[in-house]
Image 1 (cartoon, rainbow, N blue to C red):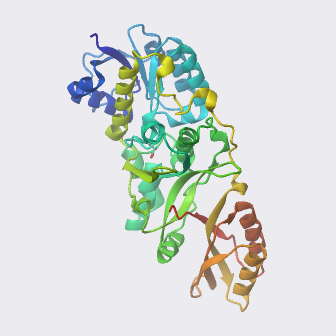
Image 2: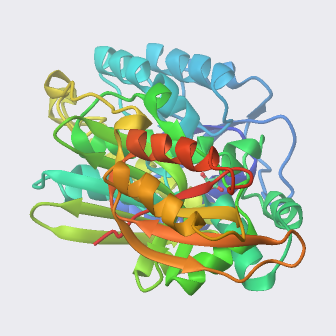
Length: 434
Ligand code: HSE
């Protein structure tokens, strides 16, 4: 049988890794796919010193790959929302299957792209868009398809987890670790996407869609980054038996779906609390399987290439099948998507860690307790530290039971208005994940 011809657009970290894995494991891959896979064209701006591309046709124009009549599958690895969107739509228009690692593209333009792909009878595969080398899209879409999924919670940004780990374990500064993550090729072109939770929200949007059978709705995700986390909170959390992780949570409730990314306290004895460095982990809770945990490298050259090539093999295997009988792009049949709404963050429920800086006066604790109790907020534990020498203030750390965010917002406004409370109250959400 003739080889399947693929065009790689972008020869950076993931593109370079994909090219190298395809060359190195060519025989093993074609034994799995049932056909040889030939890289028939590469579109790139600059050569990747880690790739030996001699003999492969090169172009500087990604659109030339999308219109090349020789090419069966376009691999989009250029990133971003604009050129990537045009490239993918053009490739689909030209009847090509597409494999992409672009989470931003899928989260923001996925509904449009999948509709176009259905119209043209082609596949758009995106395993590498979420959690690098972990095959979590396939696991949820196919492996867990018997389940009604209750929630998904994951550490889905390798850069952010790398920063938090190095800060906690080695006391390194935020800026120093971020620079290393950039040098290692983990970070996004714009690293604020990593540290402000935008990249994780892109991935969570995709996970929620395939878990619950809802359209992609990135604009409704709540996003909070890790830039305001302090060593003090990391240490207090530790003393209370928790780790702080940057978590994406998608949970189905009767009222709607919670879709939120934020720093989160997790009990230290949970497996996911011990996922460190650039590693990612995604927990999925389904009514039949219970909780499952998927772990692996969340970023990097070959881990992400592993997912790109796995998609490629899937596409090659499915190329001869009738489009109506393929696995649906978003796991559920397109005419069976649900309109269960995404909840605003004020309507989400969680437990909270609060840190209040108070003057060392009698009765402050009683006032704090009274504000919380008036709003029906149950305190789970409280820790009051000694007066701090540098400012003469007393840090009070509280853990609460689960409460509606709106009610907690109201309580925090009242706490910050107390005469003896100084500055803002630090609030970090807590998830038990059990
Ligand atoms: N910047 C991303 C991360 C790359 O650090 O997780 C993988 O999607």
